Amino acid sequence: MTVVSIIVAVAENNVIGKDNKLIWHLPADLAHFKSITMGHHIIMGRKTFESIGKPLPGRTSVIITKQKDYKADGCIAVSSLEEALKVAVNDAEVFIVGGAEIYRQSIDVAGKIYFTKVYESFEGDVFFPEIDMNKWKISSKTNFFPDEKNKFKYSFIIFVKK
Image (cartoon, rainbow, N blue to C red; front, side):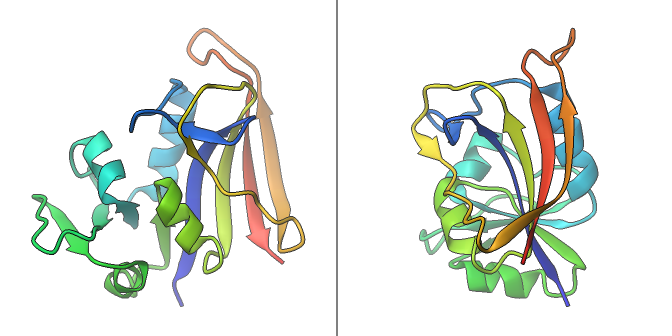
């Protein structure tokens, strides 16, 4: 049985991006993302893929797009979340990595959310959907303070479906 997990970094005001780009730079979060997703399928929307610009090494990139003839070297293009999950059916854990619309579509089918909370508000145009705490509970939380490489206070939080 494949576990569907969401992985996301979210500001205090639920912002996750602006102009199809990440807003903040937290090297610790990028390393966290890499260590969790390495060796697995990562599912994303086309705009998220194009903001990354290339397939991430050591992972299978699955791109959801409405463009019928969309191709990206080293990636699998599909037309729906359901199709993306079928592609990853043999993976023990598959990761939804964005953007906002794909997060909205997947939050009800996900069993886990790897949530980096960035304790700062940012101007943005893309937001993570509200987490319904009647459906989710925190299974772990680790807090971090700013340092020479990471400018903001942040927490790694894992939510699991109740």
